[in-house]
Length: 166
Image 1 (cartoon, one colour):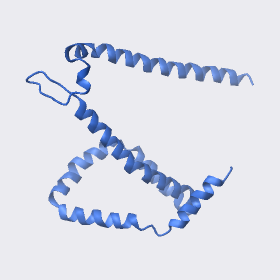
Image 2 (cartoon, rainbow, N blue to C red):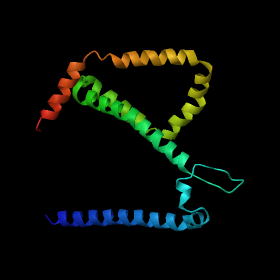
Image 3 (cartoon, rainbow, N blue to C red):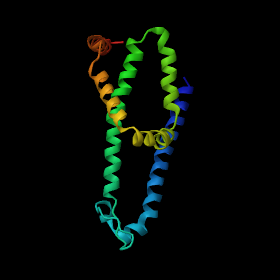
Image 4 (cartoon, rainbow, N blue to C red):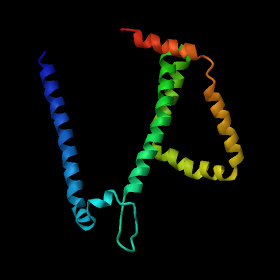
């Protein structure tokens, strides 16, 4: 039992250190941004113009673009991730769970920058050359997503999972 208080103290120290480091980083970033804040004011955050010639800068379009692209990414990723998780945990045969789970973890280990570079160097030129094939493919994917062969089985599995007290 003597180990538990020591472990709790060590964990508390690490948690406090993390919070202090975060506060220190925020303070340094604010201090380093003061010259820009003094020069352009807080209107920089809500201004839409970006004209270096006239020394007018605004970041609202970039903030808006970041928020919209992040929400779009979440809207696409969350249903896919939940579907894969539910399938692996509840529906997949035992012989398929381990290799498919390994494949998902392997894909998750690849940095997102690599996916972005793949999109820029491989997908973008292909999209420019084959727009008709792309639209036809998107239609087929939408058809596949619209028809789920075992909708009731998926719903029953999720209901069982939610009702299971263990």
